[in-house]
Length: 446
Ligand code: SF4
Image (cartoon, rainbow, N blue to C red; front, top):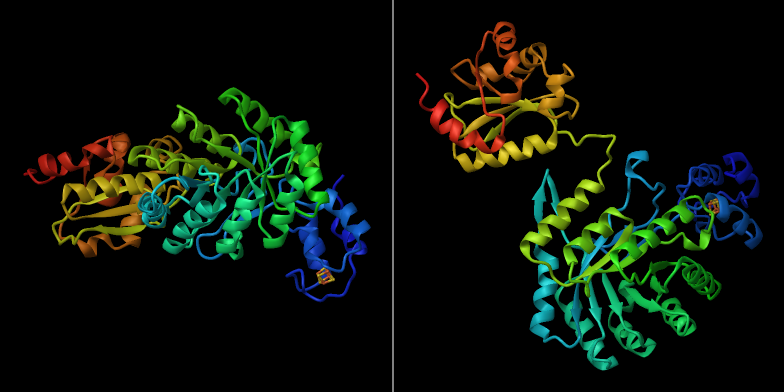
């Protein structure tokens, strides 16, 4: 049962020393009560109080940070099984996998792609997150050299994948201070791997098949003093992955098996359905996904899907209403009105840019709804268009009074003309046709 802030406060040392990052013990207690802090942040808490508080106040899935610096990222700290219940908070890191048997040039090429490649979509820069280096050579020295090659080219979060603790030790001499994720401790080698992880304060992947085995291994590693864990569930098929990952999420968020409360690792490397594995991982609870470097098409698909799944479904992504310029529009440039749903804005803006017809986009506040929904809900209406034209001084920017409205708003054309005094032209329903419309209809109008 969840504890209230005051009950938690009674168990705290009350030094108000701020070492937990909070100004007082009371504010820390309030954060704990909301599941927004980890009890381990207070160094003065007695072990007994820590175990009582930890069981009820810790986020059900631990937050694990990979790497240091600007490109570091955190995964875990999720609370729900379905994103429509609340939202998913921490998008999975997707890392390109290289092998230490590859040439330095090949390793460098993959590293530079992750370092430099950016897709911009709906106003956000989408990137891959890091590099996973696998010790396929079996040699600790070769592994260490491959890791050094990656490190020389970019400050990226790393996953070190080696069966032998000796190989990890050799590689960590190069990058230990960057806190890479080390993969993986098994039932056979976990004591040695825990010693390596503790020495460098690295997060560590544990690897086992089945929830019982994973929970037992997680418990054993925590008893060895390693608490930053990620779980490789070694799926034998896509169906096996869905079943196990779903069971882990359910048992973790209900706190039925606290030892399963860690982010999940998924390796898409050896599947012939790589795109499907990545998509499945993004949708179903993977937090660290490793894949060979992807084609341009697969990269875009993966990053787009991740962006879509990890936006809050209860908050449409919105643009600020206003009058936006595309190119350098003059006084005779067309004015196109549309909604402030970000996807609509950026899609239309892209097609307008390709049309090479400089214009104004009048973005009206439909609370982030798309055109079709906003028209149906009455949010896109003549009053809104009238008020927006005035508010953003469209009349002062152009020498005409002609407004292009979206095709789906055609039934409102008469009412908009009446309310605004502007001549209304009905644009296409599909943004992809706007270039042709501007060239064929707007520029050839009488
Ligand atoms: Fe209180 Fe512990 Fe935070 Fe210090 S570190 S303010 S004692 S909760």
